[in-house]
Amino acid sequence: MHRWKIDFSTYVKRRWRELIITDWAWLYIVILAIFVGYEVISHVPVILHTPLMSGSNFIHGIVLVGAILALGYATNDVERVIGFTGVVMATLNVVGGYVVTERMLSMFRKKGGGK
Image (cartoon, rainbow, N blue to C red; front, top):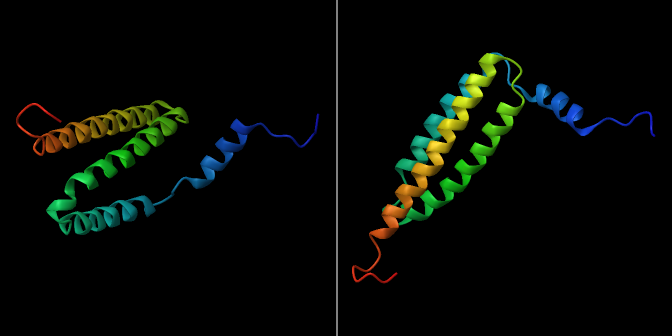
């Protein structure tokens, strides 16, 4: 066996710790995301709203996977509570998005029972 071989889980854990944002940078990122998100969403035409909702549901699914991965790397109880809260909120966001999209698409169906 090669003496420099490192298992994948150790490598991922080491790289994950290097990617953690320190200090107040996370706050600036969140504030910037709020402003950019508001500006982008407020200028969306009505005709594009339903396809955009479907696309955002896909992105929220990726957020859910990220929250599950972050929860998997939690090392103490505070991180586990925050990770669990993130998973629950992301799940509610995905389910709610699909419910809203289905309801919006049902407005375009014919009343006669056909699809």
